[in-house]
Image (cartoon, rainbow, N blue to C red):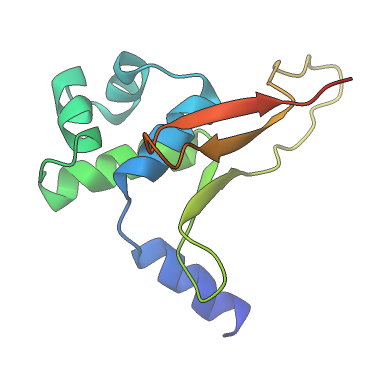
Length: 121
């Protein structure tokens, strides 16, 4: 599949609840933080993460807020399952870099909840 075709299919891809939780964990956002960024209620975000159906426009608002914060969503393929990653941010000269964890984001197979495994130094 060509790169442009893959990017287009990822843009049309429906956001999964586990991807939403992974993205919130990567951003260190709570439900209220995401709700404020997406301009929806915290209850709506919680309902989405529990797997309750929402209007497509509401799911798009949640996804757009996460993407605007730097998240990229990866659709499932033959090799791996769905996931997310953080976009590289442009470095501004003289600007202080935001602090982020230096670990890998994993999903617990038992609870299906994301967690960060910090690297040992």
